[in-house]
Amino acid sequence: MFRARRCFGVVSQSSPLLWSPRHTTTTTTTTTRRWEGTQRTSGLPEFVEQWTPRVFRSVGWGLAATSGALFGCGLYEQSLVLGVATASYWRVGVLDLESKQTLRRNFPVLIHVRYLLESIRPEIQQYFVQRDDESVPFSRAARSVVYQRAKDVRDTVSLGTRRDVYAEGHEWANHSLWNVLPSREDVETRVLIGGYSASLLNISAMSFGALSEPAIQALNDGAKKGEFYHNTGEGGISKHHLRGADVVWNVGTAYFACGVNDGGGGEGSRRRQRVFSPAMFEENASLPEVKMIEIKLSQGAKPAHGGILPASKITPAIAEARNLVDLTTDVISPATHTAFSSPAGLVNFVDLLRRRSAGKPVGVKLCVGDPVDLAALIVAMVDQPDKAPDFLTIDGSEGGTGAAPPEFQDSIGMPLAEGLSLTRSFLDGAGLRNDVKIIASGKIYDGFSLCRSLALGADLCNSARGMMFALGCIQALKCNTNKCPTGITTQDPRLHSGLDVPSKADRVANFHRNTLHSTTEIMAAIGARTPRDVRPEHFFRRENGIHVKSYADMHADYFAGVPPGSLLDLLHNPSSFSGEKNNNVVPRRIRAWWLDGIALYERTKHQDQLTLAD
Image 1 (cartoon, one colour):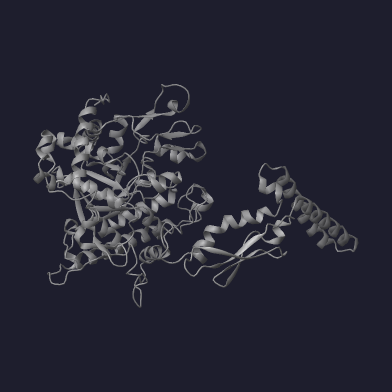
Image 2 (cartoon, rainbow, N blue to C red; image 1 turned 45 degrees about the horizontal axis):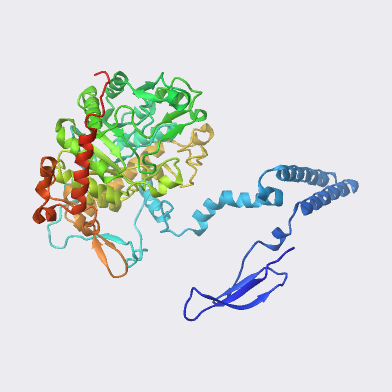
């Protein structure tokens, strides 16, 4: 067998990154390298390199001969067991040799050891390798806090923080020393949106279909006990959402529970496209459990990306919730809405839903992308204030989903901190901050992450994965396989039948109550009585071992705050901010985005002709 001649090296005294040749070897043992005096192996183990199809056959014939010899010696049971194993060995090996995969053909049978190790790697990583503070996507320490609060057991820690407070990225809130601190009982934990009083913490959008029946039931029962709302996700309103809790109905691009299949169009996906039905929407919006309506533009984990519900996952219960007639056809959720395609069209759609729902609060969910697009939406709200949404749900790119392309999960859309800061600045500058509430969602699971979101501009928060951990999620990372071991993200009855609804509902309610308790303690410590009292100046982040910035300064370059109403003059008199004095009032980038947003709104103002029956 060919063996390459390898170089050995020692670490240079002048640079730890440089190698210097020392000597070479051609021994038959595994190639080694020396790194600061520590010997390490590299390459494949010797027996793997020597395993070939010829060796596979030799071992197979040897096993067959051994089985025959055992039979000849009267050891029938042992011969039978070895014979079955030998037959399985040959079957797997022959299939490997006929495969088109290179590794299977080169290393028949043995390659399946690699596949086995790959399959259990996430569990090995989580339980034996990963540190408590390592986030992928949630650290063990973070999950432990949720588990303890959901079980209503002690969540305190001893002997001081486990975090390196001088490490880059460490965050903290400055407490009040001299101000008269409000008691925790005086801190407000309800926020008025339109005519609805919402909790500071609620269940974020998770669809029935993405989650199992008992998972939805437990979430709804927990929300009822804790008096907070349950967002349906874009999968429609199922009977499992109507168990007594307040419901926020999420209306997505496929208009589940408020849309019908488009009978026109050509071949392909257009034949399965769904269109909005005002009459169907009005029927479901009148349900007493539905307290608010949320129009989904995008979500943080896959902004500007549609999805497909495979026919294989459509059960009769899911079809009922989503108003699907054909259970044999894949259902497409497009990336954009068909009812509107512009900022003006969106606010008109908001107005239509508000009137069709007898005045219930209507909002918009989005992951912030191009600042100009967001500015154009705010301009539309200023131009038609009676049609403005009651709330904006800002979903950060760190948000979760059952399945999404890795590029979209990792690299598309603004994270929550920047999205909140920009939205707050535009609403402040447009004079709408008191009229439009901001809901934050994206990796919110404890009191600190909730308060940090309030400081960045949120009025209240939603949590998805935090609620899943309360249900018992172990972060097995199998949400997209229909094999969730905890029965939360699977439609397999064998798996979700193990989820006990009453006990899990108690855990959801416990998690909500204990997290709010932590939140109000933090708010009281910094001297805040209301969510609006929590300011960016309260929170700090270490950039390195020396430099520190408050959240107010951290976003000063791109997402700086602006004085209330300071953007309104630009709407009708763009030249009013040409002077140096006014340029200092509104930062250059905010001003440029706002002016481009005005132009985008004016250019597309008459683009949408809303033809829906009113």
